[in-house]
Image (cartoon, rainbow, N blue to C red; front, top):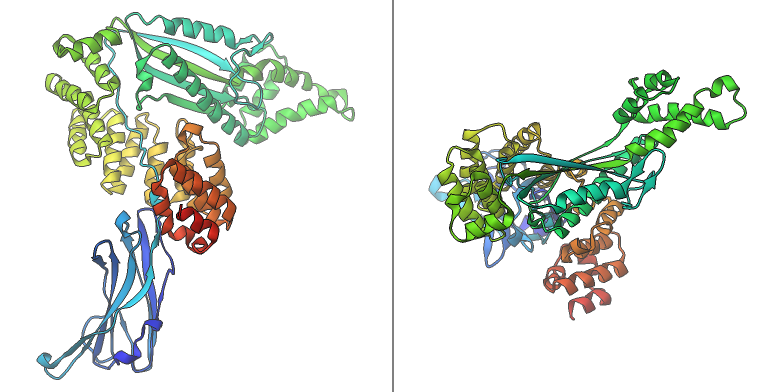
Length: 582
């Protein structure tokens, strides 16, 4: 019997093991020749992954028995032979990247007495080696939520409205229109003059609301609004940094944002206008039609006015739509910037001086939180938050902020303890649920993490980025793409988005996501992923060019590429070998 089971009877399935989400599929098919299983015989096939320094992971055994064997088995095969397919999923660990899959058949033949049973271990068969682990290269850049302070002084808000040229998201500081009255220089001057007065002022928040006028397709207008949001956020952050606001240098600094096609704003502007036929347009806007249909119906009136074929009676609304285009629409192409702060609290310099001179007791709760938020030293942050939870033990904020800090240090079990305490004090704050979601995701409690993010969203926290990462580790890349697009600001030009497109086989979209990244964000993994995309597209020149850039930034990429299954078909090419041997 043993001679009839040979290694050529086994075929790996899949032929190439590949990580999707947090795991990879392992499998094989086996053809059992006639007479390979005795009637009372049992063959146990033991798949083993071998890796590292003689480490191995034994997988679920597959049992084949003869028709008269009594043992439990996965399949019964008689003297005519047969075949079977084995499949299982394995949680991926980086050390497994160059593993070898082997199968060890163990034969047992039942005799009339148990002590006379014959057991044989047949020669092991090597089926395949190596795992395509590109999916495991995702950035674990979840957005933690840390309130910077509590309001103890007089709350101050200042708003500026920045306008854009039609169908663009480029920020033009000198953009002016006489009618309607639009002036970016004037708006910026007022905002900057307010921010320049930092006397006893603490920056506590920033909100952005970017929109597009509904005189185009909904898809295009959504893109315009999102990119305007990104543009103005980068400008405001740079301006705050120029004015000396240390808060923006913190990696946690972000803004609450909202983007939209401004159909509601158009409705309100027309309703308050002096147009004699405004009810015609309001009827269109109040209908249940899709946004693109509403825009098309209004634009038809303008087209009629330009077309001599139509009679004057059919042209009655075109002048009104011309007015809407020239005087109402421009005011809807905007980004509303609201900067929030406090008066009546100490300046950052005073807070920092007292804290660094061990004079915490002279600071109020808001000032201690602000110091913990802005100081860069991680040990000092932790010390500050531990002081806070000792002095203000009944406030959820300190436990949340300490928990978030521990999340950033990847101490998830410790972080969860602090966050559970925060939740026991108050269940009203989305920040706590968001941070708990990050803990549970990293502890592979995916269902709990999803529920945490749902609760965070219900309390005003945008879950796009974190749910996107959760969807990635679940292997649902289409869902992850949707979440990244819904993040605020949208995460379309980032590594994780490109990786999702790559895993979906959408290589053109993956390339676009990498190309539009900010230059400072393009790291060695960026160019390495470009090389992977080129390899999958069979483009040797692009592969070597991008891999060369990756290696120049980080020489460790050379050893990674040397045995990466992504480049298997190029390994013998002189161009690839030259790059590996430099």
